[in-house]
Length: 459
Image 1 (cartoon, helix red, strand yellow):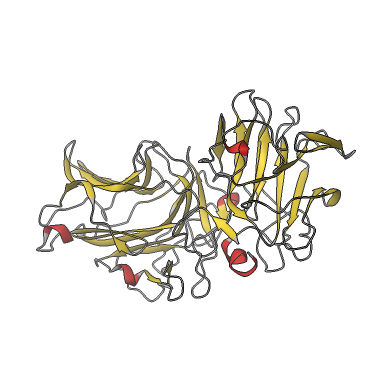
Image 2 (spheres, rainbow, N blue to C red; image 1 turned 180 degrees about the vertical axis):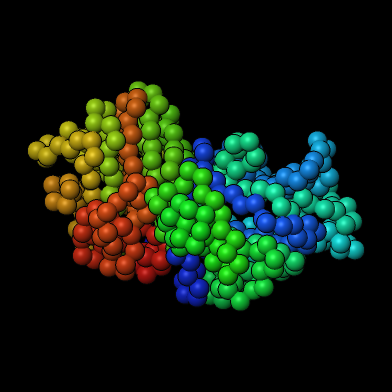
């Protein structure tokens, strides 16, 4: 059995496939477009697929301002989802969910469907999450009849940022669709998988997008506001977005139809680690021992990933641990327990607190690969440096499941992890046997990158 943090993570196999998403760093990246003319401020639908990275912070998904009206959708500092419209400093409309959105392994589809001319006040603004309408709100200030939202005007519309360069989104966005002139049903934009019941995207190319409508699929990697840019509109309207501090590295294959592992900031054993680049870059902020682990755990299958050190003096380590290891609560280095295994930068391999020197150390920029075989009678972990195997060891059958892990043993230790959608420029171009991932090294035969499509087949 393979484990993923419980979530409606759009891992249903088959059907329409989304190939790309855009990774936002939470500090200075966004997309922005100013329509050439205003359209209907009262009737529209905005849909996007969202995978969060950072929690506990005000993070804007989209924002627009017109005259004194500011309208936006965002996660607040307590991880509730909020839609509001302010004019100028009082809330004309405000909807705050009663539930929190704290699953960093999940892809959420969030739809805001607006028709402020609807005769039923509660139906003027509808919010759907994963195909289900949100009806439980801690604050529910409904839209006035005929309210002009300030959206769809000839003013900047920002994705991933509030105005004035603040409250940036941290995470992944995919399949962004804006319909001008219709309050769409959720089923116009997605469907429930008939086998799993998971909400998943559908091909929306046949929709009528309207005057200012657009579709962002992140199929291109350029930075210009045209059809070759990350913010290219593929609806046919050519309403391309200007790219701000996003590069080709931010075009990823971690999507709502193939969800890749990242590192998990909710891990109980984490101490003084900061996460960046979609939770694929970890930095230690003090000198105590601490670990970071993957969002996906596995107890069967053959899996491969790569990791690279960006600081050569602080002895990071790469390996695996049981998902319920004592290292969850007893902070110590990876490999100090009997259910964890680690290769450190100086070439020492640790398990159960015992070290053996492999004779191969590594430094800044060295690409370290790890493969684990959980299917064979003798279960193994193997380590690689720049494409060559350096060590192989037997590992126990997991009591629960294994997560990939990095160990930080000093202040300033920096690691970047590649589960197939790297947070850094990777020219290797090596994918697994199913064609997933971009790795520096050739993926060992029969091993696979850690994503939900591979899990459904081999996990």
